[in-house]
Length: 278
Image (cartoon, rainbow, N blue to C red; front, side, top):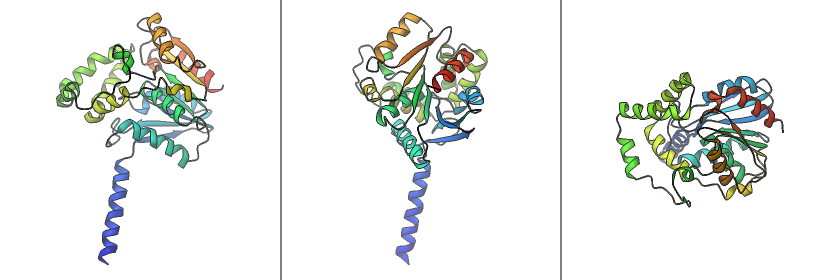
């Protein structure tokens, strides 16, 4: 009897741990061929609302919000690797055949990672202003050196009070989005974020260098880049980072910052509708 009780308690504990480690929430909208939509860092799946309103007329949209954002409970690290593993498990468990991956920023990088690891699982990738190695954009002569979680910048951000954190987001968001009304939405999402996820999850993203792994991708890849602040510099960056994937088609949204879905929504929707059919 005692053994049975202990075993039951152990199983309940395991189930609780598994539930706590749920790496994302998914909203499924529409019917048709499956499409996974991944938001960028700090955002919720609502960043895709306008796109989903259009796509769901013909496609089954699986809209993800990652743990630690949008009220989805945070998980223990490694955050990004756990998301990646659970997306693959979600696809297999639900027997979803050849979904198209659409991801913005971090979500686009995640899409590239998934397609490089599971070349036959996904139909295509549409990466919206996403790079295979974000750290190379920020760190001169970056060669893939890992960034430690425990560093002065991380400690400073973890120690920030809510007002300071909100002030930081209010300063950074206008550089990423020209649409002033949507800036308010983005700032609110970032202010809501679980702080540990915000700090350590960003390091996970920076530590992911897929430049060589791109060669493993078999699915068609379409990259929609933002031309701001300087088209020539942006093109050089994209050409360098996607050098191992020459079949990738790269196009640029003029007069758009990072959040193309807010700065150039009509252009983005036209491109998604064009590429999702290929």
